[in-house]
Length: 139
Image 1 (cartoon, rainbow, N blue to C red):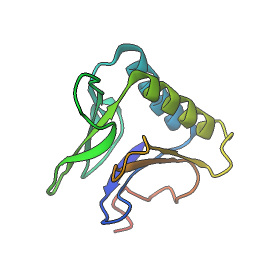
Image 2 (cartoon, rainbow, N blue to C red):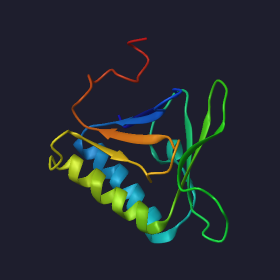
Image 3 (cartoon, rainbow, N blue to C red):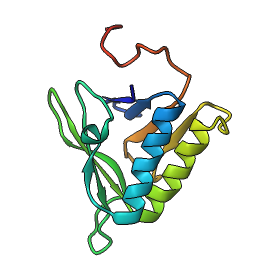
């Protein structure tokens, strides 16, 4: 099961996305489709399971002073994060995730970031964590 959890922190907040190779290929496909059409999508409606995190992927509006990257939009029990990406960046992220899924990443993970100060980094991982991590069974 492809799953995610937001891990807030004062210094290095993180959205952790975990799955097996096939699931990461599907996640790469989701990013590729977004790169093609730019339509906003909520990750949980596209099969990225989370008990406590909502993420909306939407196109970065170049006509505004909006910052690229992942940002906390609402806090609380089930925080909302907005992931604002250009189509080009989403395409590059899709390639990075596909390399991880295909075993071409030395670390077994990809870190997706726009290199903007204080953005929430997205770590997409395959094989670095036990199967039950993020499912609630270990808490």
